Length: 249
Figure 1 (cartoon, rainbow, N blue to C red):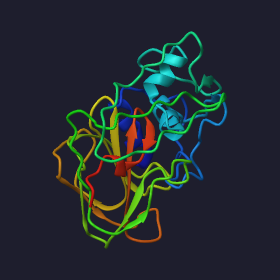
Figure 2: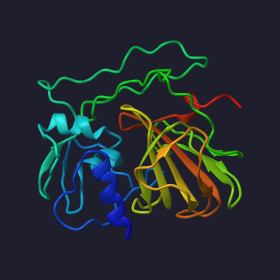
Figure 3: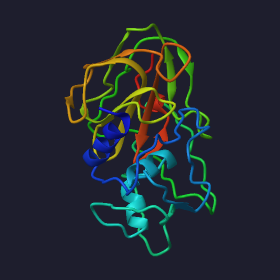
Figure 4: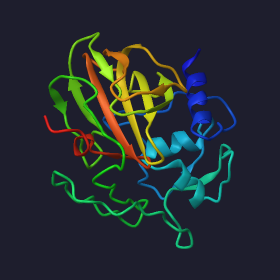
């Protein structure tokens, strides 16, 4: 199956349908160089875009984008449409539950400016979620709050096991997001997703229910220059620091 077909399948699993037109590879990079951040207040839909892909690349929750633009399921969008990437004054913003004190001190989130969408600090704990490290290895690169790195990079060797950091189900598996190589995205609950990039051999497919600690792939170098795992955690669409949730080493 082609990459764009796989990504379209993931969109359906996430509760959205693709826009009209072809489905080119979205310009996404874990280093943030190709990611469309919502520096602008609006985004003009291009052929191949979906509400899910626009939200992912902008670090937003697709349900928020739908609400801000009065788009109802099945979330059909069309090329040329102008989408708001921030809440208007008459649209209610959903706030996360109050955070409980965490074992570690986490820096406060950056304050959004007037042209950026409203961001809310994720809870310091994640309810019933019990995160674990997805693989062993040296930490090559840390999460950057300014967007230069949307996750962490863990070094290792080709063929090294990659494990699910928490239970959930696979909403995407493929190579349709440029810069991520072979990628797996797991949805854990209504708020949290995790992403595993640069995989070699894949052992799961879209729709699979995954257990915590289950082997989902082998480490590889797809889409990058060395064997490593790029690991992301996203809270309501926005990238957050995975080390705020993973156990201390």
